[in-house]
Length: 198
Ligand code: IMP
Image (cartoon, rainbow, N blue to C red; front, side):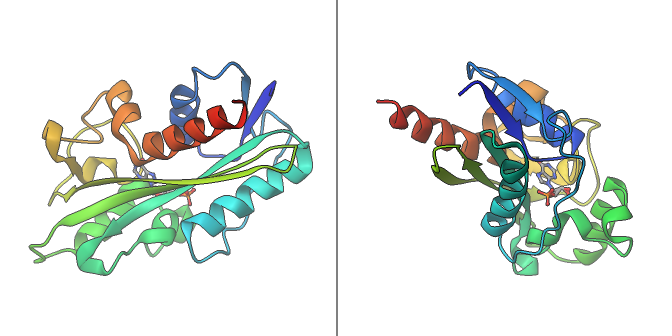
């Protein structure tokens, strides 16, 4: 493999994926850098379906090895919401800012004492020889009652990672890329890739 295309237009997600996959001996490009100036509609009902839709659209356009991540936050007390709707979970939908989204989540959790939640990342990797790799990673935590920290993106300021007693917006980029749902899903993908060449 010479090139790996990341099927995403989310700059923060791309930065994380590039860092997590940086040990791979390949040129890593975003879909835009590979000429895919489109946004794939996430019509699936699961993370895995949406990851596949994104990877497939970019793979079909470029013919190059492609990786997509579909991810989100699942809150126990909200029966797994916002889940696959994490990116559009606020009255403004996709146009709502990260802050509007997490403030909306806080409003939904007002008075709720069970704050358990998990981030989930589903990875789909499509290779030119027809190989499909699908993995999933999770990271459990607690939703705070107010935001803490400036780093990360999305719901990070609300997500307390208990082993470090910090939110994902307070940990360093290096720390997040070792412990996150995305890091875990990518790790599993890399394991499977290694096995392909043995
Ligand atoms: P999608 O995978 O592009 O559908 O969007 C995932 C959405 O889930 C993001 O827009 C964030 O709101 C949320 N999300 C996914 N991963 C993370 C993360 O690592 N930190 C914070 N929020 C995340």
